[in-house]
Length: 449
Ligand code: GDP
Image (cartoon, rainbow, N blue to C red):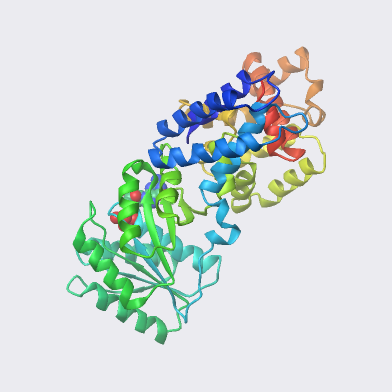
């Protein structure tokens, strides 16, 4: 995700050290870097231009307060504007689904073929059923690919929602109306209508989905777009936004190696909030989209919130909350906490999903590393911690040469590996200290280096 932006910003913060104010000249240099990074991340040019203009305007009026350097102050402006561009300017409620409709509340899914519409329909059904306690019915108006109807039936059954069967010989508008009648009769709270997607934008498809929209008047019309599409996302977003009164966007495949530009461009083109992000092929891989958190992630400040949330969802909710409270309350992050974190990573099904949420310096360390290798590494680290005494775990600073040798022998590794592990622990401890005192500004000060 936009890792070049992180690196470029860090560079500018460094070069701007020693300057007392934000001036036209030093701001211009930084903005050039930001512009390059956004273009490299596949953000569309008009979106980049508007973004740069906004940052420039805000930066020149920005007072450099307290111990912030001008570079850090500028990063602050970039962070705020990035969050705004991704939807923070719309307010916290903008990403919520609306149910303001005589039940059932209807959600119409729109988008090209292959972007993840059907999968997202299943994910939404699961989310609405489990998180919002809604009775959900799904229906497929994709009469061109019989397999599409069967696929929706399959994902709907998997999440335990109700499915309204349709047939390839029916008309999409009739399918939608019949499903609506059925949903009313059976007291469903929500009806999700999956629609046909073509490989490219075509007039007939737009007319068909517009007709379905007119027939059932959904309270939500979600445009599903693949984050990996990059620049191509723009044209599609424009076409759908012109043809339909969209109410929101779902950005899928954010777990892939997308350069993240689509998030910014699609929001720019449609003006509509990104409500959800798809983060895996599995049916629980849907996250509420949080613009501020996304901006922080893009800027490489890591995402401790997401980590804690992930942990909460996973196995060891109590441990995660305990750790968060301990750190917040000024407690020391010790070897036991480190082990708990490592173990959770393992339990949460691998490192790849977590990688994205760690601060940039960790991501860099892990970039290119083979995931199997990384997981093996985690197991070895846990082995090393297990070879420590309780006293050493609580006070890792006790561990000097003799103890290192004993621990290494106990874990069956070389002493260097124990050293490396202690270094990693220290880095984590430093990060935790920074996060404790109120997040963002401190993290930025940390970027000075
Ligand atoms: P549709 O043609 O738009 O209905 O697309 P599908 O729902 O059939 O999805 C197309 C492919 O994308 C499938 O292989 C899905 O498993 C995959 N997919 C959908 N959403 C995500 C996501 O958020 N992450 C990943 N990695 N894959 C996804």
